[in-house]
Length: 537
Image 1 (tube, rainbow, N blue to C red):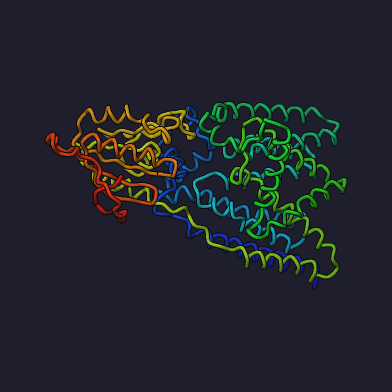
Image 2: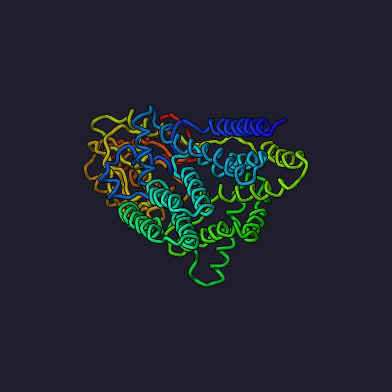
């Protein structure tokens, strides 16, 4: 068999194998598409993408990139439905990672099975799989980080101005679509620029490229990112920042997050493959021609903890997922390069093919979207409401009510949500309770708004509560008790796992000898969805 025929056969086998893995990954993710309702943490993204103008995007600055939001807005305008359009961008990005990673490993090591192993590791990563059906930018973070990592390595192999110019264009552009990728691009450009300086005598063009990069990065950062965080977001992510209390706490944080990244970069039950990452780094250091790549890896690792210590980017299992493909590819390339040293083809390709098959057989599982029925609650609220009714929205239900009600909404900048905005319904006689800091544990802060509402003496108040997590049920119970004490009787119209819709009806005053109206007491069982029964406390 000629070398040309053998090469064509290898390419065909590689393409067929990667295509099969992509099809497998897509089939495992399909059950998570088009859910009956968007999850609480996804619906605000969809609402902002649908409703925000360019001026509101620049003024509110939600903590997702502007380009990502713009693409989500485009999908909502072009495609039908309320859920699927905002899932397609992460879905497509998560699939695009697979062939790109496989191609990079095969190009680096020459092993067909090594590339297929890389594809399997990327396809079955549990975090990237879960977020491939969520309206979040984690999948696009991973894809763009991999693209910029590959562009950096290309610059390090050939430190020429044209390649550096390409990276200087791509890295600032990433600020539009992915903040972690922007970090990867910035670190990659700095390392690539150093390599170009060391290998070139004509430094004038390099200085001009560096100046353009710094100007673009600074301008986009100020316009799109500066001022994006707030105290609510800082409090929420406090556990994800490097502790400043003592050096021992900081070192413990670095060690725990490094272990988290190594373990989470691989499919379930295959975390031990993370052992290959330090080995791969040592091999990069050992060979002179790859030391610049090792410098890039070390600089990126250091920069990630530096921005965490500066309270600019938190580190947990989700926010570090952009690095998972990079770590998985280091492991796949390491073992593939070692296997390529074998003389026998069955060892060079067979061992890794067997390993890839074992990962598929033990780790392939369907992706499920978080269960929820919030959309049905809001639609029940709309169907039951009449023009003269007052509508009351629980604080953390404002985004879902704004997205699914069909009523016009206004996006209002606020500091008490990490999202940096809340939705106000423009329907007459609508009240959205404000999310005062600590209202979950001190629901009495809601009383002024409730008292003002009751003072109008509305005959009927339709109330929807969503996202009733454990720490928010006290505020919900307080609202029910408040209306009961104010002479209203409640009827439950619909119920879901973490929410319900109630109708409060004002009762005529009772004689002095009668008991004051209130909520029904007793331990009656919780009614089923869609029922209209008296609501308990």
